[in-house]
Amino acid sequence: MNSNRNDKRNVKNNVKRNRSLFRRGTAGFVILTLMFSLMSVPVYASTNATNQTPYEKVLSAKEDVKDAKKALADAEERFETGDISDEDMEYVGWEFLDMMVETAYENDKDDIDSSDLVPLSKLTVQGNIDKALKVSSCRSAINKFNNSKSASKTYEGRLKRALSVKNIKKALDIIDKCNAYRKRRGLAAYKVSPYLMAGAAVSSLITFKNGSHSYPHSGKFTNINGVKVSESYAWGYSDPFYIWYTVESRRAAAGQGGTSHFRAIINRRYKLTGASWYDPKNLANQVFTKSSAGTSYTTSEFRKLFDDYVKTRKQEVADEKKALLQGDKEPNYLIEARENLEKAQKKFAKALKAYKPTLVAVNYNYRTIKVKFSIPEEFSGIEIYRSETGKKNSFELIKTAKKGTYIYDSNKPVGTTLYYKMRLYKKVNGEKVFTKYSDIVSATTLPSKTRNVEFKVKESSNTIKISWFALHGVTGYNIYAKGDDDKYYKQLKPGEEINGLILKEAKDPTKASATITYNKAGTYRFKIRAYAVNEETGETVFGNYSEIAKVTI
Image (cartoon, rainbow, N blue to C red; front, side, top):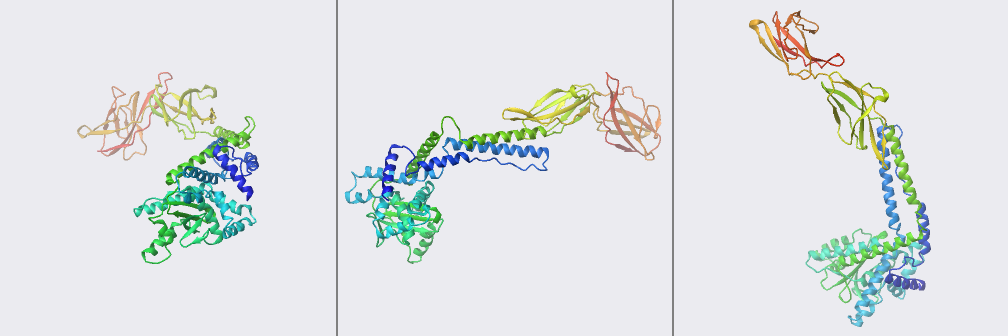
């Protein structure tokens, strides 16, 4: 243990000067840790692409890129923060508590009565260990630890665990919860004594090995290095207050014994406290003292000092580790993370190039074609091409869009047939990567569908007045009809009797109405479609039929 005392003196000096992380013989270990960490690489997730559709492969590759980017971000953060491991920080809690005790002692030595102060000066973590070795029961417990086969089970090894960053924060949580119970009863909060925090950590493990209170116990108090404390101890409970408060408060209410832990929580005479937590065994220890002598803090003040210290030490460790790298060389895990992202991006680009989107073109009206498409969220945008002939090299880019589901291609002569194709694109690593072109689709500008067909019957003259919604750009309308006895619809022509109906010749063929004479009563069904003639080609094109309309006479 002499070497431990020498090491602790080095720790004390290094803490005060905020110097190197290499203490307690850890320099060689840190270098080995760094060598191994340089060889370990986070690998991005890869999804089995067997039997996937092209679009599913795009989705899968996109997720791979996402995972690889996260892995790279983690690697960069790991590098910037020095790739700090638990081993790098294993003495931080120990150092902090000793620093706090030593600082408190320097602050307190001129203000506290010597009879109170002398014991406090021995309450560093190492001071507690040294004192414990002089007490037979404590020395026996420590020897039991140190005679364990596993080095991690030595007393010092377990004490490092109890003083880990996580466990010191848990110890402060215990004090906060204790103070919350006190607040319910209108009692002042306990303040945190750095002396008692160090003492609680050392004594809890000795108590665990002894199976009884750590230091010599007299009456209601445990004597830790001359400081009388009330000591609450529990193991095996994730929340020690279940037994300390919940169970024992019920006992107290029932007038039963076994309530000492509960009474320590609500004691009006106790002023200061300290606590510890050892997570492998859920060992909780909280000590209390009546004396208010010495430097003390609220839990929030103490926690902030600890958090600030941990942050500073992490930065020191990070700087030391980065200094081990020669020149501008990066660690292997960072290099490989970048390579993994590049591989994922190439895989994504390959999946994009293999994907074939779908395009639809339909007639919208006599001068407009509606081109419909979709831009999945995996893509950045779309390019639409048009051709008048549909030949391979005749397509020209007419539209680039980042959102939307359709465009109108307008101002075309009626009867014009146009051809379209499209491709999607995605920016990968700053460059546009294009999918395959869609299949070529075509559409023709046609008159719109005739709609809103209505009738007016004049029985005195055996005539039917039929009308509909007038359409733009039409040359005329064809009317088709059949009676009850007719099998097929036939086109009505002016002056000719067809299916018992005679169409009167119209002065204006573009007019949206007609007069029809019938020769017998019955039910007649009609459908109408518009037509238009392309002025350039002379070709006649037709719109869609109206819905069937019927009239009964």
